[in-house]
Amino acid sequence: MSVMLKRAYEQPSDSDGQRILVDRLWPRGVAKAKARIDLWLKEVAPSTELRQWFGHAPEKWPEFKKRYCEELKNNPALSQLQQQAQQGNITLIYAAKDQSHNEAVVLKEMLEGRLVLD
Image (cartoon, rainbow, N blue to C red; front, side, top):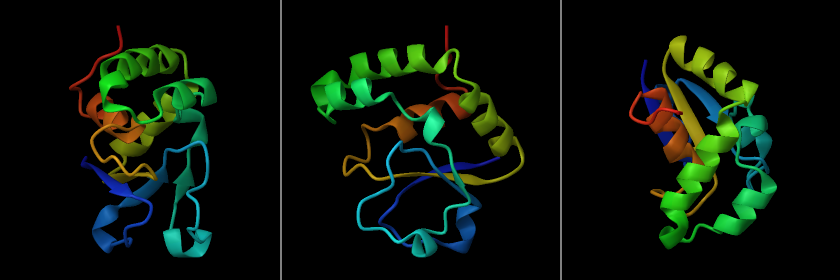
């Protein structure tokens, strides 16, 4: 299993494996056919309230991760994502400009066992 990250605005490639969009909203300006999304798992994305509070402000990153993990504890979409990852290579697709501070980074850490829900 390999988990990769890619912005929705980057070109899809054959090495992506299954492409899973993990944003609650469809990326602005991206045509569905061109995006080649295999699964849109919007239920695994942060809540609207958490996303708006965070606003991709790096200084809020540690608190965002903590709150997002709390949201994921009872989220059935997380187990669906874990099942997809066990089937082969996946690429988590996200729209955020900040490549280091977004929900896909948190999900990748979880899937790779580097971040564990308490």
